[in-house]
Image (cartoon, rainbow, N blue to C red):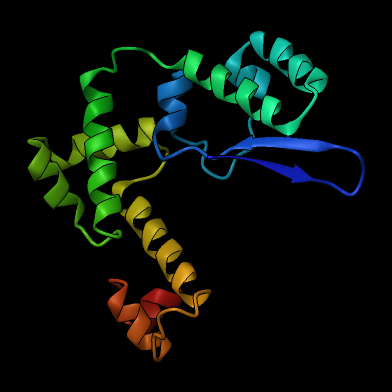
Amino acid sequence: SFGLVHTPRDWKVVGAKLLPGAAHTLFGLPMGGTCDQVLELELVCGYQVRELESRIAEASNDAERIDLVQRFLLSQLDATPNDRDLLVRRAVGTIWQSGGQVRARTIASSLGIGMRRLQRLFESRIGLSPKALARTIRLTRVAEQLGSDDEPFGSLTDLAYASGFSDQAHFIH
């Protein structure tokens, strides 16, 4: 998804929210060690990002800015993803659909690969282990539920159990 951040001054920030594994697919970056890091866009995308930045600055409206970023990202896609990327996409989809409540061994088995290979694929493509991604998805869903008035959840302990945490202590950790 795309968005604009309006700042106190007359600056505008255009951002793109990517799914797990998308940065590797778009830019070919090894994602291991990039978690919680700020990467210079030019180091990631190369010199062509300078042209993109100037075109964004010259754009007459926000819709045009978002369109420029979207077209740039689409131009980075490889038309034929390799087998490893497809495995990661399937694994991420399985974790997402389960709400983060699926075991990594189950995923590896369903893909017909070993646990170590799954971990290496996640480290290089996403920068997180399958278990860490599942925990992040569970916590995201918990945060959504805490912020929603639609579904009362009772106690935090009940919410922890319903979200796949073994107890409230693991949930709080």
